[in-house]
Image 1 (tube, rainbow, N blue to C red):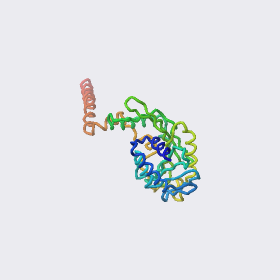
Image 2 (image 1 turned 90 degrees about the vertical axis):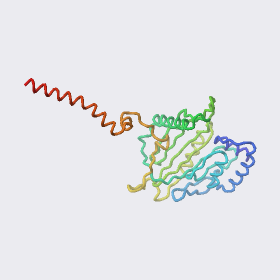
Image 3 (image 1 turned 180 degrees about the vertical axis):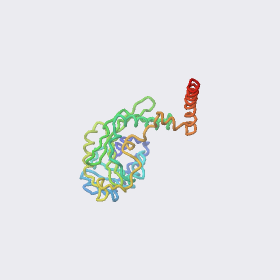
Image 4 (image 1 turned 60 degrees about the vertical axis):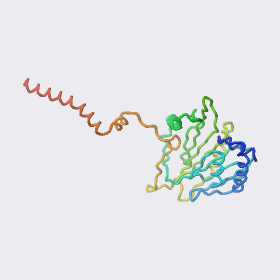
Length: 287
């Protein structure tokens, strides 16, 4: 049991002192008391259900957030719980988040893998710049799984290949595979955290779990109506963050302000008007 606790901590890049290990083990025991073991039907509020098979366990809130905080991870208000294997030699986990902020159009026009990779790298650089020289600095090497959208099941899956720089040393990170399941009034976000060496097997495991998710009647993506509230985000933003600011002529114009724009137009038009007037006078004189 204790070995698995340490493995999960290392998987999520958590750091603890040796003195904190016993208390962490005690917390894990408490967490296990709250765990739901498959086969069991998990309910995500009134949105959807997951038929969790045998061999898996689910840690609900608030125990899930307490455990993540204990191993140096941040929880959030959308965190619903954690899916784990009930086998002691498995060192992967899946975070499940539930968002209820409206539907997201399944628009694949903005899901070009190369453009999204450039966008993700830009936002990562901006994050590192905000942190200054503080280590570790996150880097994006490429895609482990390029974004792919299943229009039939309304699912989007992707995984970036990430590593950290600690000084000049490259430190590998666990693989993070994200899966979005879209509904009428919100979405589920499953994030698999696993070792790179078992990525293919674990992605198959993730897909098997996704196939067991069913949105409730009235909450299905196919039931979207024109008057339904729409989320303020989109698929591309969820994958790669905000769009990179434009640097073209329209952006430069907007930065100048309206009055400077008017002045520039006057300066451009005035010589043309004077030349036209002069030509008109020359025509009158010659006639």
